[in-house]
Amino acid sequence: MKQINNIKDYLKFIEQRHANNSLFFRGQLEKFDGFPPTIARDSEFIAHENEMIQETLQKKYDEFNNLDTPLKKLAKMQHYGIPTRLVDLTTDALVALYFAVENVEDKSPGNIYIFDEKGYSINSREANLLSLIPFIADRDLNNVVLEYRKQYNEIITLNEVLNIIGKPIFINYSVELEDSNPRLLNQLGTFLICTNKFVDGKITDELMSLEKFCPVEVIRIPFEYKKEIKQRLDLDYDINSSKEYPELNNFADYIKNKYKTSLPVDVSYSIVNIKDVSIATAKRKSITVELHDQSEIDGIKNLVMGIMNEYKNDTDVIWMYVARNTDDLIACNWFLICQWINPHLNKKYRPTTLGQFESGYYWVFSKSYSIDSDVMQLSFENDDKTLLLSHKEIWNDFLKVYLILKKSLNEFGWDRFAQELNSRKSEISKLYKKLQNFGLSHNKDFDDFLYEFTDCINEIDNLHYILDNTSIQISGKQFLVEKTFHRSDKKISKICTEISQWENTLQIDE
Image (tube, rainbow, N blue to C red; front, side, top):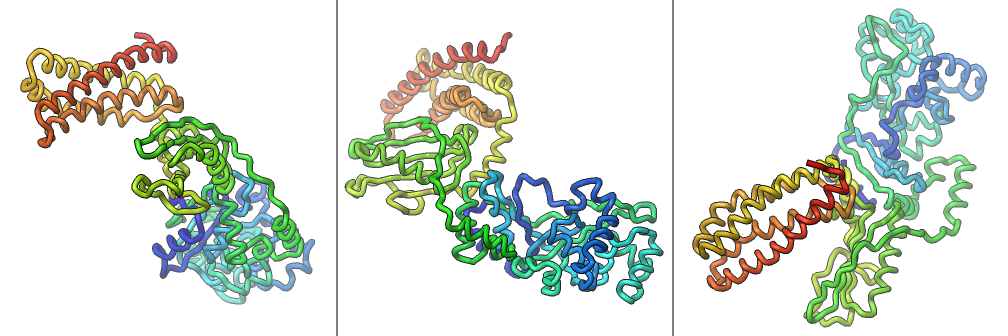
């Protein structure tokens, strides 16, 4: 799966990966599991497929009488919402993108599924047969052969039926279908025709699964960018509801929504942390923000600029890191990063700028936060009890090594310490790496506590860099090592105290 936040990157991605391919696309909300045909979404529908078709043809005779093929009749039924075995597709990447972002109120991401499959003509024997099957009540194979001859005035053999009935097919776009479904022209729309399962020499009422058709790409449009992309599709490409649904009533809805004044987006958030990261020449702040609910990108940008404005008067540089939720915050999976630099700050003291400049700020918009969040959830699989016990086991092993190193320095001198550290270097590094495998906690306070294990062991793991640095005199190395042990003693004391507190909180006993 690939996350994309704008139309330019979307078209570029498709061009780079599939420039010379004839593709089929489907856009829909991610929350819908797969894309079964409407007839298969209710067991009562599929059980009465033929009856629904015959009643429709009988009671709406004038609507369907002028359509000369079963496929055209199915396409018209699909247009008016009658359950069929057709699955809507398009050959236009931008149309699929529109359908993925069409519902901007629903907070599910929009997905575009891309298929690189053989397409069949609407008049091919495969399309003719598979679209005829639902019109036949008695699906005995010999009867299917007879009905095919009646409908198309041509012979089809039993072996041909057996070969065709075995798989669903993709239909190439054709203007001929416009008469039955006027939307297809604007949507460059077409269909996938599902087929029945064939068991013990008989055509059953059950449809074959579409799982064999795996998309070659799945592109996710996060909720935050859906509205912005929908607006750009309208302004830049004239792709909108009035175009995709050309009926007059849909055009009226489009006009009303387009010129309706939008209310400002109210984004719920918390400022989690404000750090003073000043240097002697410039006052700097780092601000971390957690969002409490999903919101559109414009609303989030306005929120960020509003918070920034509160700190500009007494600050030269501000960085703001925004996470969509607590889990993203814990994993530092930033939705966006914003930077403001006082334009009057001396150029010598200006930090390296980030991302793109817009409205007086530098912006970095993550191109993978949504996908990263899915992957990151694997890191939250262990419960807090397991996490603490796993960390404690590593911690006890580390303390043994730590006490040996400290004793060698205090009692046996520098040379013995250097020798001991070199022999323990690999062991310490392995302990540090093991901590990375245990995952994260949904509880931020607990997760911050677990990080203290990593931070402390990392200090000792880095001691060998001091010893290996040839630019530092022995006396300087000794001073840095002693400072490291001094800091580590404080951290170890704090961790050992807090372990007991967390054991009580998590109800862990011996």
